[in-house]
Amino acid sequence: MQKRSVMIAGHASSVTLEEAFWDELKQIAADRGQSVNQLVTEIDSGRFGPQAPGSLSSAIRVFVLGWVKEGAPPSPP
Image 1 (spheres, rainbow, N blue to C red):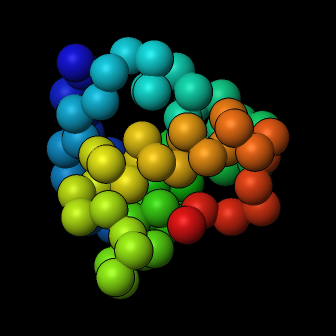
Image 2 (image 1 turned 60 degrees about the horizontal axis):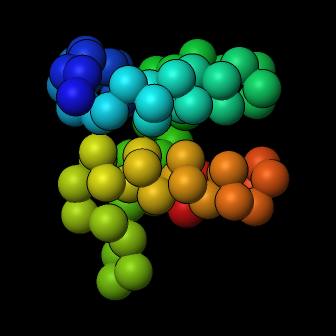
């Protein structure tokens, strides 16, 4: 597990993910022409609701899994 700092809408936060998820997240951000912080901000903004994962780490994992399984969904959940 790797704990890293990210900026979410201008606020510092820390997220703990397995290295494989960090690697995929970086690649997805690059493929979308975004920084990791921009992508994490998008994922964070979509994680509140009845079907959304509660923690940011979980939301990132679900997003990465969806991206890998579906072949690049257009936007975070």
